[in-house]
Amino acid sequence: MTSFFSEEQSADAVNARMGKDVDPRLKTVMSALVHHLHAFVKEVELTEDEWERAISFLTATGQMCDEQRQEYILLSDVLGASMLVDAINNRRPEGATESTVFGPFHVENAPVRKMGDCISLDGKGESCLFEGRITDLDGTPISNAKIDVWADNAEGFYDVQQPGHQPKWNNRGIFVTGDDGAYCFVGSKPVSYPIPDDGPVGKMLFLLGRHPFRPAHMHFMITAPGYQKLVTHTFVDGDEYLTSDTVFGVKQSLIAPFEKTENGTPVWKSSFDFVLAPATPPNNPA
Ligand code: BEZ
Ligand code: FE
Image 1 (cartoon, helix red, strand yellow):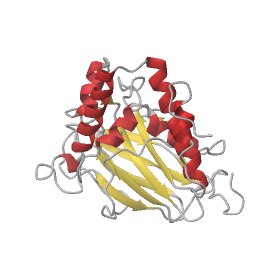
Image 2: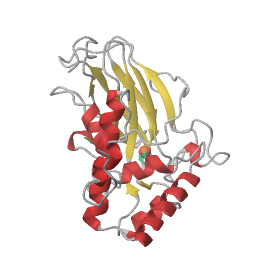
Image 3: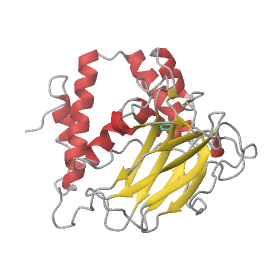
């Protein structure tokens, strides 16, 4: 029997329209989306004015996006959705280094540098030695691990946010480990910075009484044959935003020591070891 749309069974009326041959995963995801969307509209008794404002907000969010700027990812980040997707998809065994949000500022194919090289091409800020080892769960060093790092400069901006002002590839580089699994490079000590807040997401944060800051961090993406890719950061211990990261990326285990060196060159040193989880065998998904 045909059932017309009604407030009581609104989600069912929409989901009943789905065809028979719809991809099963698409069916699961879309039915749940419709179900939760309708429940949300009912829970808050959305007004027509609020509905129009929501449409304007989503339109402005899309209009803010271009090659350099992904306002929808920022929206997902500040709503905690990015970290939730990360948590669900990166459950790792005890002892493996935890992952965190990828963020919008990674650039593919950064220059491959030699261990010990400096990635701070503008020379601004306080210098910092980053060093440690990449190992497996048993502590065995992993050779041939590719460590892709990126960070903001001492003024709190990534090179891609200031083309022409910062040198290309400033505070970026790829390092490859040898047999000892060790890495070391010099950079500037990261500083806390606001995520881009001159668009609809920034306006939303303001209306919600939230600040746009992230605590100071260095990004790491580590890949090695036979191991799960690790996308993570190390956070500067003591940063004032550690407990209020606007994108919820901080995990206790990722807070790294930053200590002043004795001879002052570089000024700071941060030691942090990364432990990679083995790749999941394809026929035995965890
Ligand atoms: C970042 O750490 O680069 C970042 C992450 C989420 C949103 C904006 C920036
Ligand atoms: Fe960042």
